[in-house]
Length: 332
Image 1 (cartoon, rainbow, N blue to C red):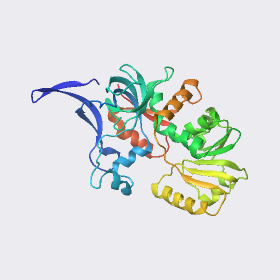
Image 2: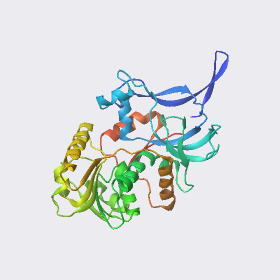
Image 3: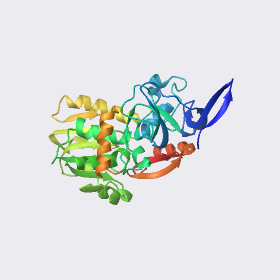
Image 4: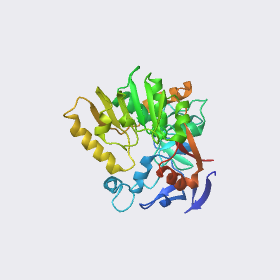
């Protein structure tokens, strides 16, 4: 839908569609509304959005868990615009912007990206051989996988990594990035995702409905845990003496925090390192992901596509916990 203009107190107001969250609650609080078209600041660009994607972090801006409301607002959200991942075309650039210009096709992260237009700074040029939907699937999940494996996990060529939750948004990128780093990848997923995970590069796939990976005798240099469904003690047994256990997520935030505290205490007494990891979005790593996309070393796995005004349904599917790869929002 293209923007349209209204006369307001003698001036022209350009109105566009965006997803707005004005109260905390389930996905239904995400409402498609008409808002004023944003204007870029001196260090920003205005993006005509072509696609976005949903992430577990988007749930936090709806007030879950309760503790997060100390940051997002006690009674209602301070930030009412939803969405982070974005891909689209630059329509205007602030006076201080030198690396992007109108007409450039870009992808990256902008708060409020579930919209027809959004302003932001953390954006890089999209590879020509990648669609807008593919590019929009990358930023949050891709950077989490990249920084987790490369920086916090210190993964090197020839090492062994186990990825628990390999069929999810972060997991599918982790499998491919680990292979690009030269590692031997063991991936854990459900029966219906075994062939898909194998097709994106996993050397070995464990079907968790048939086999409990914590009971095997294999040893790993890194465990990259996107699920948090096993105890740290059970997982630590699978690590090499200098191995690293990296906690990326868990179905419940309380579980993640408990694992993080357990890991902190346990690290004082064992030779392995145990971390809870939160990514930091940077243009430098977006550019790294762009190179991996362009070379074909990573290809986003897209489960389903929804329209802009169907974001609530997309979030509902994500929160059910069975998405295969990424869920994309297409903005026409």
